[in-house]
Image 1 (cartoon, rainbow, N blue to C red):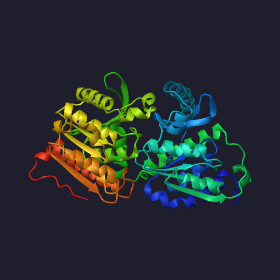
Image 2 (cartoon, rainbow, N blue to C red):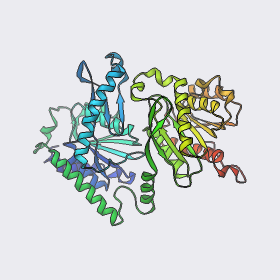
Image 3 (cartoon, one colour):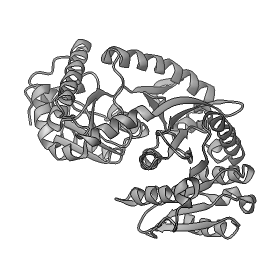
Length: 458
C-alpha cells in the first residue's frame, strides 16, 4: 500500500481505528512525522490530540544502548536487565535522566506553546506514528503512556515491518498497521511525498486541534470527553487532583492528591514492586473511590534513584517508614479518617504501618503480599480486606496464611478467573467495587447507617 502523504495515511488509518471512538480515546502523535497522521486520526475519533515526547536513556559508556526511556510527568521506564548487565549505577541513572529530562521539557514546551499536557489517566490512548522500522521509539512511547496511567494503549501506524508489528503486540494492548511488509527498507519508501515535518507544522497542527476542540466544547459537543454531565464530571475530576510534594520524613516524595468537596475520608495508595503512582490499575481504583466521595493520595514510596535498585521494592521497613511519614504529613493537611490501599509489596507496608498507627481506619490489599508484614499481622486493628485473583494460586495461599494471623475484622475476596494484575475484562472493576464498599463501610458515615453495606462475593 502506497500513501500519497501523511495526511492521506492519517485519513486511511482513521478509518481503521474508527471503532475506538466509543472508548473516548486520547490520540498521541510522535513528533515530528507522527503528528500530521495523528491529527487526522484525532479528527475522525472526535478525540483530543497531543504529542507524546519520549527521550531514550542511554548507557553512559554506550549511549546508543538504551536502558530505558522517560516521558512527561516524571514517568520513566527502565530495563532492569540492561541496567544490571551494563552495571549502570543509580547516580549515573539520575545524571542521564536529568540531562534528558531537560531536553524533553524543552521540546514539549515548544510544541504546546504553553498549553497543558492532555491527561491520559484511565483512558484509552492511541499512539500514532507515520511508520515504524525498529519500533524502539514507538515501544518507549507505549510504555510511557501506560506508565502515565493509560488504561489501554493502542499503537496505530500506516506501515511497518511485519516482524516489528508482531513484536509490538507484546508492548501495546492492540496494534493497528494498515500495511505490514515482509520486505521493508524504510518508512519513506511507502510514501509518494515523505518530506520532513517541521517543528512549525507540529506546533500549527496541535494549535488547530486544540482550537477545534475548544470550539466543539463551547458548542456543547465535547470532543472525546463525552457530553453533558459526563464532561462536567471529567472537568471536575481534573480540578480535584493536584500534584503535591509529600514530606515523608527524610525525603520528599511526589504525589497526586485528590480530595472531592465534602469528602469524608482519604485513602492512601501504597503501590507494589515495579509500579508507581502512575499505575493505571491503582489510578482506575482511585477514580472509583473519588466518584464515591472519598479522597485519594497516590505517591511514590521510593525516589527515582532508589527504584533503580530492585532490592529496595522489597525493603518493607523503608516502605513502611515512608508510608507512616506520609500519613503524618496528610493528617496535618486533611483532618479526615485515613485508609490504606496496598498492592503487592505495598500491601505489606500498609499492614505494617497500620500495626504501628492504630488510628488508620481500614486497609485493602490487592494481590498483596501480607506475609511480608509478619510478625506484626496480629497487631493490626484496622478492618482488613484481602482481594486476590482466582488464578493467582501462590498469592491465594500466602493471603490465607496471613489471614489466619490477623486478629482484626477481616475478609478475603477471590475474583474468579483473575490473574495477579487483574488485567482480565471486568476484573479490576470488581476490585474497585469491593474496595469502595469496604472503605465506605469503615471510614465514613455510611458505615453508621442501619444495615451493613452490601459486599458481593465475586
